[in-house]
Image: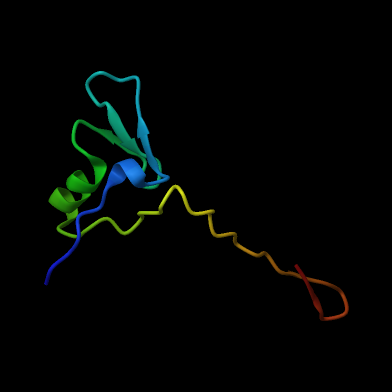
Length: 75
């Protein structure tokens, strides 16, 4: 099983913090760390990061459907 390493610097959820003790963070998982977030996720969970999203791609939009009184749907 050959998994490719996730590059957090290209991920839309990665950010640099002002906290000197924890300079890197992941908005998707909601934590700050000394390590690169994908390395920390791998170390703690034993699995590669599942939240990676390329920051150069437009985000996928969730389409919300609302049911009207006549049984139809509106987007």
